[in-house]
Image (cartoon, rainbow, N blue to C red; front, side):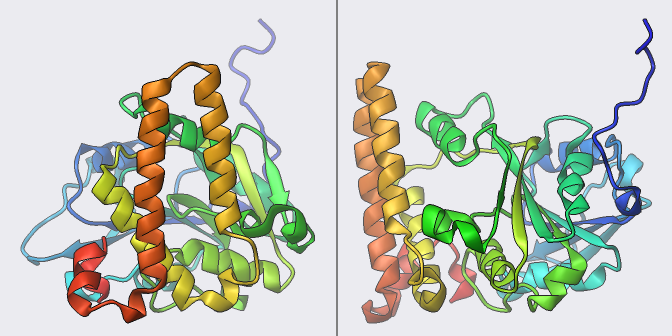
Length: 320
């Protein structure tokens, strides 16, 4: 009885309470986008502003914004040929004057009303420059997608720094702009998101931040629903773009182990599927991993491929 009506507190530093701006790139949104905006307006800490970076093919197309969010939403049209994973988010970040900029994608939905609050709590540590959320698969996610999300986004918090590179390798810089918050001052010191990248703008930024002495926080208690049931071809194309990114920023990705992390995940999922006697899913894992590997390798050596094959293999045609 004594706790009834009592406000929950997670140890938030009050300086960040009215200093969080959201940046959301949007392209052909579905119902999840509207639900995302509605959920954001139900947060214990509401966004100061929401900058929608709307990639458009026809500028007459209007986004439907829920009434509850209209006062704080700013829509900035981006021509499709001008969209870039780094430059578009950089543009959004430059619009913000808040202490914290929070990046989300249009298909990620807060799991509860404490998402933003729990995302900013790690900034109580002045050396933390970025925090990223735990991604929970949607109910319709297939078994492999669910297991992959659990592997990449466990329920245990973690703070990573340069001291962890030997132990974690590429995982030290793992961070996802599906839902990530950045300390604006640190973000600017690191030079901002790269202007031109097909993929991985979040990990490239994380690498830069760790390089100048900052930490990366995995806020496991800050949760969003997010998952994809990709086809074999979609896995191939996504990993083709991943390979392109690793090649274009080889000075970053060559300095730490990356492929070994993928192999480790495959072995972990294989053992789990065998123990659960999910043999059909095991076959699915082998085939999916094959498509991912072929896509990655072709992407890494994209420079020797004819341009028509690059355009055929990529998921982000506008990049080229």
